[in-house]
Structure formats: C-alpha cells, structure tokens
Length: 237
Image 1 (spheres, one colour):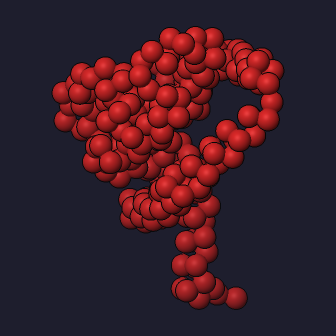
Image 2: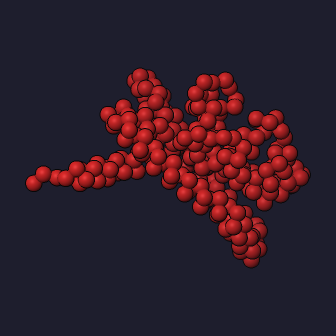
Image 3: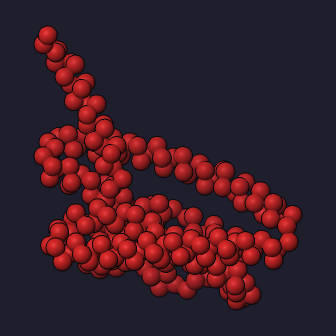
C-alpha cells in the first residue's frame, strides 16, 4: 500500500518535532542538527517552533513574577515567623552546605571533562553543547553561596542599605528588559567587541561564549553600567 503525500508529510513533521524536543535543551542545537544532515528548511521550522514555545513560556513567567511570586514570598515569610530564627538558620545552613558541596564537585568534574575533550581536539561547538548544565550549576553555586553569606553576616548586609527582599526582587528583574535578545536568547556581548552574537541569556542568567563572562542580572548591571551594589539593586526594583 502506497502512503499518501499527506501521510508522509505528517510523519515527517512528527519526526521533526521529536528531534526538536530532544535537542532543544542543548546550546547550539540548530547547528548540531544541521551537522547531522537535517535540511535547512527543517531546522528553520524547528526554530520557529522554539520561538513560539519561548513566547508562551515567557508570558507565563511574566505573569508568575508579577502576580504569584510576591504571594509565595509573603507566605514563606509568615511561615518562617512561626519558628525560632536560629533553628531556621541552622537548617538553611545545612541545606546550603550540602548544595554547595555537590555543585563544587559537579563543576570540577565538568571542567576536567572539558579539558580532556580539548586535548582530544574535540571541536569547541560540540564542547559548548555541554555547557548548559555547567551554566546552571555555576548559577546555583553563586546563589547558594550568596544566601549562606546573608545568614552568616546579616548585619554586614543590612549596612548596605537594601533589604533581602529588595535584593531578591532585583535578582528577578528580567534580562530581556535591559538588552535586546535575538533568536535563541542570543545577543552581542557588551563586554567585548564582536561581529556575531555570543552572549546567551538562559533562566535570567547571562553567559558569553566569547569572553566567558557569566553572572546574574545584578552582576550584569554592575559590570555594564559601572554601578555599585546598592545603586544597582535600587535601580531594578
């Protein structure tokens, strides 16, 4: 039995959707699929799906930041008030120490693996696909280290003139409201001269594949605009 053209087209489209979904979490997935022999028009189609998907996700994130996140923080604050602060801080420290240890181990293993791949002349474009998890781990390590410092030195942080709630709110300020992002959340890096976009924004965290700069929205504004910590926080809330 000969399949109709519509059936073949439907099957082809279904295969493309599976390929897109399996690869979309990788940095540079379009180039990777093109190198595997996927036709340019098919990669463009998957790129359009990704753009539409990101638009939907971004709309939900914006709604969550504006309407739900403040409620969650208020409920957490009310919940913590029911317990002794020392008891809460001790448990937070235990959790943070555990996460920091795991993240340090994971980053060390990732760097060793990257060095081994480089020695074997594995192309950079392929090694960059592995940076996605490393980027998340680095972000988590900095976040947890910061939270631990706030517990250990609360008075020092208070002297800066901004509350923990203000700092948290500033960290949630969306990158896309400060810089214009192109496809796949990429743009030209503001920290060095380049012809093509190499600065990636993912989960409100920036990373440059050119100069290796990485950081959250606070670090980005402080570096780009040459502002101090307090001034930066206040400018984002």
